[in-house]
Length: 194
Image (cartoon, rainbow, N blue to C red; front, top):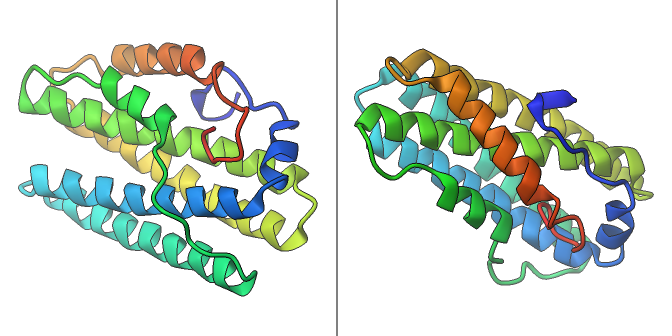
């Protein structure tokens, strides 16, 4: 399975997504905004790690660029960017994140949290790109899939590099096992992680 995920998305989820493209695009736009905000907050908490700051500023800019691209598609199609959506999947992942321990523990878990979201987003974009009937969106999601895979690799790589004294691989396996159980409750709505 790509990206270490245990469960792949049922392609029939794309039928649900296609039933309300406006909702899918609005949700997706806000996902990109949240990804940019997450990268910025990682910079704010870990400003002394120069390499991390440099890479995450680039990711934040890319995520904002994606937000803009989705917004352009929304406008071109005569849709409206709706209000920010709650992402229950991400909120449950957030609750799984360790909130105690050292600064290094916190950094590792925040990076693994980000890596997990990127991994699932990448997987969902792959399923969309391969199954959506709309050719413009199929190409769009194929391009984004490649970008998300790069972000996933970056976050996981930083967790391994800066997680001195933390059992990073063991913790990553815990994240994968948790996500495997979590994602079974999703795939029923026209949202990126829904």
